[in-house]
Length: 169
Image (cartoon, rainbow, N blue to C red; front, side, top):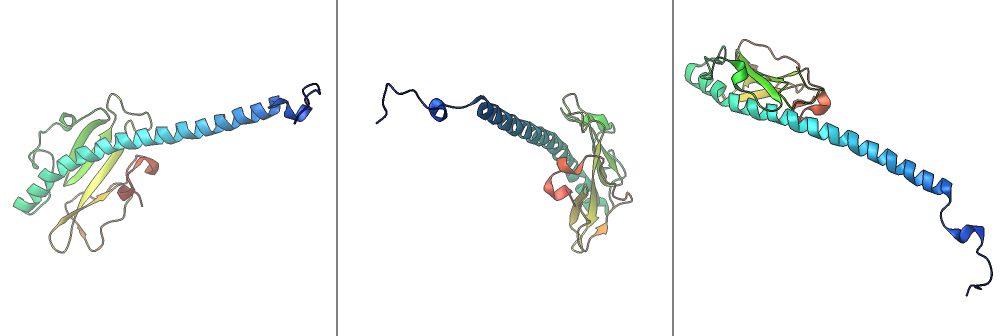
């Protein structure tokens, strides 16, 4: 039992100022890491909108290939409107088709500054069983598949850290 009349020792008075400063510094470091991770997460979500728009353009490209045997030369040949900016969203400014390749340009009104003006391409390849496979971003071409259409694959200008896993090398 502690004697109430005896003064407390220096050690038992609680936290010192240095201990509190160290704790605050650690909290600050953890907060800065969390903010950076969240920013990357939000930009990835914005890039996902572009992937969704590309998925919508894949259907007419595959249909044109299935019906005519060749990839469509442009949006009109694939059955879409002729104006690329007709397909836009909050983070996507346009979706273009060039000999079957789908080029998604980012830069909508709410797009993050790191992706404004960048392009992500999805290129169609034909498998041995006549199935259309897609190459996205920095990913390698599908194994055993041949380029379908006249446009070669273009490396994206979107940073790899913002791309989905299947679009990274």
